[in-house]
Length: 239
Image (spheres, rainbow, N blue to C red):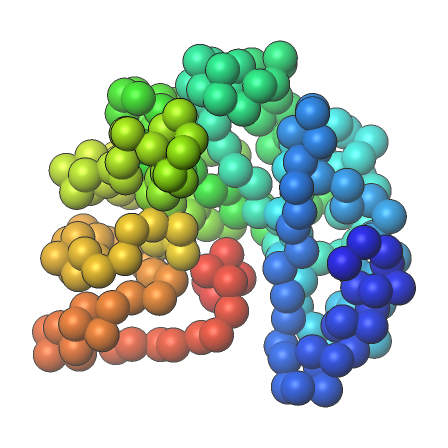
């Protein structure tokens, strides 16, 4: 959708099909920002008139932009966090460095955002230290939950040869996150599929939720005595 009216039409159609909510995201500009501000009034309409939940994928924000965006009264504000300066400059092509992400978190909370859910993509940095620095940053803020993702490099891109993070690295980051943050840690939808052994290890370690677990993982969890609560919504919203 490229206009607020198109978003409103889509939301009404989704509501008519018994939809409960939506994630609003989009491509970033050269400054890492997603052009959501024209949609603020429409998001407020979706929340108030249609009674649907909205998760906004914010991109980077200044304080004025964060204040306007929080006026949308969205249920949740999701933000990708990167604290590896080399990744920020050479792979995301942003000039501001790690402080950009700290500023965005501060701006959202200063604007009154009630639920901010950072996402950390494991494997985007060449070394695990980059992942851990992202965990360190979010641990200093009253975040609602933390979502861990796994890099899925696309064929033909510079990161394709890196491959997704191995299970050892993924679990090391998860365990570190569980020690550092005082909120639920969930496993998000962007990760390699089919590794049910890793999914089970995440549950054993203490992950609070998981997007699209494999059938084998669900069967194991039931047999192991876990109560399974299934919700068809963004992982950032379900806790």
